[in-house]
Length: 50
Image: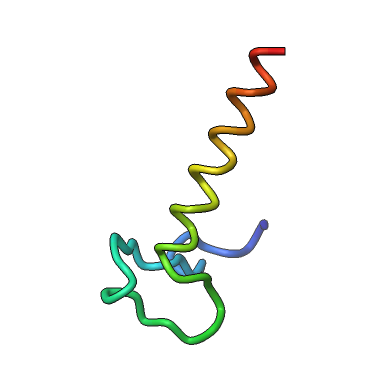
């Protein structure tokens, strides 16, 4: 990334609910993200237990 300043990089706005996202189809709704994160957490715990 040489030549690209940090200020030019776009970042996603932090969201804590589906209502405060500026949803334009690029990102999944927050509720779906939380569901996926929880599912991955359960899978990770199951793998660690093996």
